[in-house]
Image (tube, rainbow, N blue to C red; front, side):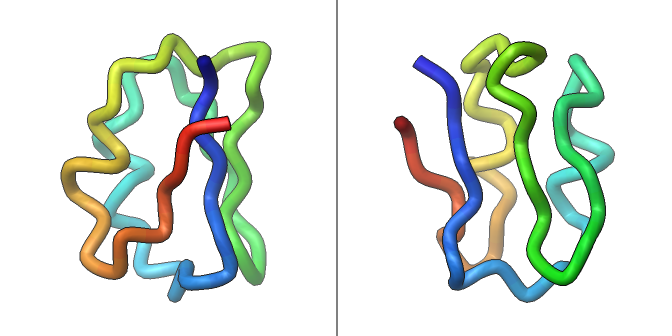
Length: 55
């Protein structure tokens, strides 16, 4: 099950370095590509605003 980033995202970039699949794209709110996401949960563990949810 892929993760997604919610509106709580503050675009701090903490999750980018933690994604081994490079599935996260920068923007006003970051976006996780579900086709690349391996559901490792690294992004959710490091997110300071708990903006990562599972689909």
